[in-house]
Amino acid sequence: MADITRIEANVRKEFGKGSARRARRAGLIPAVVYSDAVEPIHLDLPGHETFLVVKDNANALVNLAFDGEEQLALVKDIQRHPVRRDIMHLDLFAVRRDETVQVTVPLVLTGEAEQGTVVNQEYFEILVEAPVIDIPEHLEVSIEGLAEGDVVYASALQMPEGVTHDMDEEEVLASIVVPEEVPETEGDEEAAAGEGEEAEAAEGEEAEAEEE
Image 1: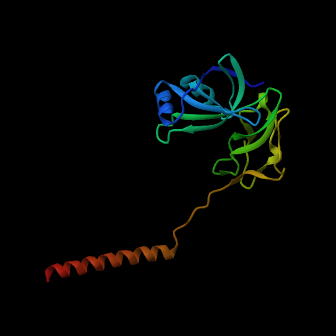
Image 2 (image 1 turned 90 degrees about the vertical axis):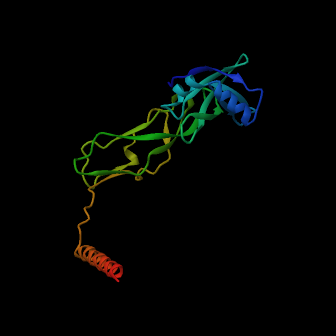
Image 3 (image 1 turned 30 degrees about the vertical axis):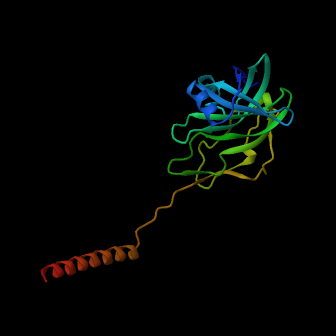
């Protein structure tokens, strides 16, 4: 079962860019909670505590406490400052403990392929359907000892109990290749020599022009 952090939040009474800036200066993160079943709830969340919850888990599940009420919510979108990378705003989706949701989770390749090879990873995230209280933080596939020409298919995914995906079993997740060396051809050498000769000729012409 996923860890559910309880976060004390404040209901926002003011809106607009000015209000959001004041909240951030006070160490708070503006957020909105929404779903098909509830009206949007605008909140200010404690900045440091919220950062710790979401920094390693894009699908963090939190229990928001505000005005004597509590609401379970799933992080859906994190807006960051383009330079400082501070969290500027959070979108959260209101959920129930007994429901199933569709989310994307990171795909992590574990182990090392044979020395001298390169891993071409085709998928970095996998769309899954999972119980909201049992969303995996990531999925793992091993590439340990794989050699040139080996391919990892979606059939290699080890899904936690209750978690499913709709990918074709033959979908390629990663492949192992040897990087190609690009030899310097005779044409390249001739082109380089030609460029050198042209440069020397140009310098000679400039010298003659100066003498004149």
